[in-house]
Length: 337
Image 1 (cartoon, rainbow, N blue to C red):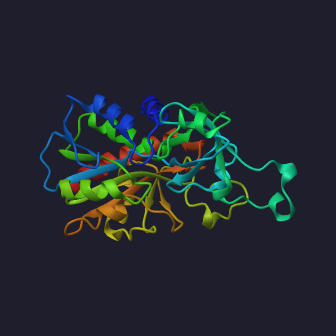
Image 2 (tube, rainbow, N blue to C red):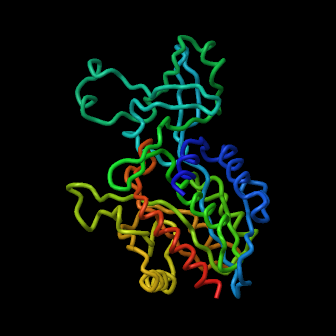
Image 3 (cartoon, rainbow, N blue to C red):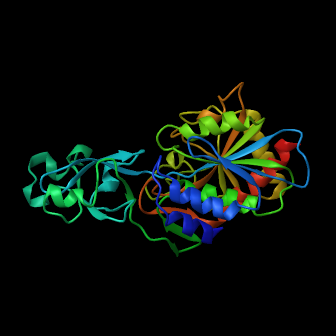
């Protein structure tokens, strides 16, 4: 799975521009299962398992990543932009950006020797930032970047430290890799898979894929912020790298079924799978759209803990990814029965 995560991480696909991710996934699943794409661009796949389930189960992961979109071209050839998805302004400063057509740029800010007063210590407003693509005029810039073009962080993928990986878009290419691994293995029960679009800008793809599949149960595979770093109080660390799959009981978009939450911990304990709760009420994911689809769908989220989320240097633990994979299949079996 780690090789797959690397290949997915190095592909670029902001919300609504998931073409390269979609093409990669289709190449990997074609001939292994039945699949189609819907009007929004979600991939809906059905994989035959050993048994026919009593309940229809859907597993979901989103293909899109956070990025930027060009909104204006200045007379000096620099590009004004707005984030696509939630990006902390601090993360943008002086970062390298690659547009979908391969144009490179650097997010620029006012030089420190020109700042005055509070400007020296305050984070600049996102509106004051621009992307320098190396051109000197609007006319030159327009040959390389058009208004509406999207871009993402430029970042390498590396393995380092104690079972750690670093790369961009691990949210949620990790989840996509887990789904691919499941589709390419022998499953205990028939299952539906949704590789959804536009999660980062409002859970849009999952809204239509859940409606189309109409499952009894849904398992959302996501990443979530791990704040397990020095000087963060224990109760604010959210989850920890190396402690296994993080299961949500409440976030900003979903109040999860306690029955399903307890089931996850019971099944994990029985199977010897490392598991932990996500302990801070923050964020949201496709479960927020899925659990309200049609007449309601019983939904649970299994998270891979991730430091420095929505940045060019997301960090995950490979052991946690294995725990997420194991728990996803265990819950598929439990819910199918």
